[in-house]
Image 1 (spheres, one colour):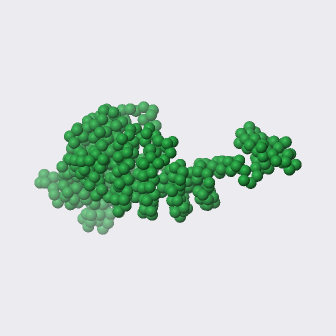
Image 2: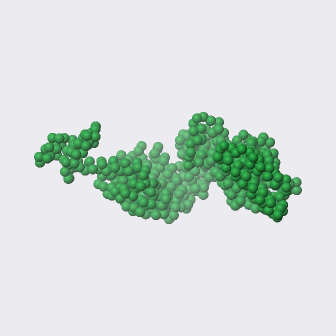
Length: 580
């Protein structure tokens, strides 16, 4: 290197040795060697030298890769203009990396990149498939938030998908005989986001063309078939309703579903059941729904493969109607408690770590529980049936039944359910009556599990049950006489006595706070009638006991005790107001 530099200084042509300077800069073992190599490149590489181009684009790619891995939003404003300029670089590797960097920028700061979407759209027409694919990756993320502003992408997407299907991409993009399956899937995913309105008719022919090509393949083609089916079902409903009536296998993608759902291969069966889950329920017809397909779904519910069974349950949920709701909900409830038993029975280190690990996604139990509650609210046959299901879930539901879940149930009681089988004027009153009966059957104790009630079990979540029971009594306890039978004692004084008994029996401060809230609500509704002295005496006694008892060490428990004292004081104020 020293001799080359010396020759350059003497005015000699030493371009023949520039390649060695570049190698030293890239592969030097020490900082000194790399420094010498870069110094030699600076001196020897003249303008217009091909090696200068190679060196420059490699440096830009490295810089863009570094930006892709950076998670500092403060850096984006100063770098976004430079990255946008890289979209016009002569080398495809730079343009591709620039798009990846812009996607990373978009996820970190959407508003900063959004104004430049028009410049990024031009990359969809790039002659290099790798750059075009990177642009699809960017818009697959961006279209989720701004589908309305991206309808202009449709012509480019149709063009790209048509090119891929017609085999116009280089042979390097073939995968097991399938032309660029990942590019096809990305195109279809973006089309699914854009095809809700009048654009679906323009995209349908090329989507069907992709379906026809994928029907002839295997492996990766199955993923394209699944995405085609999901895309068509996301289009305007008239599209899939028209296609599902066709007997032509080239025009009706739904006819391919039995091929997978009835397969003995577990992977293909799972794919078939997943395809069924994507189909719009309005498109179910005898043209493609056969007895063999129905048999395959029933078998999937009893499959030993947990993944297939779970997908079959999701399908079952989509098949809900007023006629089959009870049977399907019973199957979902069975799966819910079975899932709970499996988790508790596994009890190993892995299951404990899974329970402790926080996640923004709902667990399998939570998903099934949400399906049960939604199905019961929309398709339940009667109020009595609904309340029986709710109490069963509250008592046996385990830790999945949180206070937030209970509040969702309470909102249904308060605002009314959507099922045509419910009388929403009777539902809250029946809920209060069922709560009274439940407390009597439990001997007024909710702090620990009682074996007197046939539905109880060691997994009873007392806070959720108590929250629901005492909320319904506090809100609707004064209205229970409206539909009471002759032998039932649902007058307001009886409800107050039951609540006082619960306050004495249950020493859990959280449950006591629920009881006191119900007592205060009913006492306000009873005004100007005085509150029985026996009830005020019980509340005063409990308030004194909490005051004289040493507070627990835990801060959360201390706050709960203070809350009980505050609620008791509020009740006594209402009672004194009634006396005066």
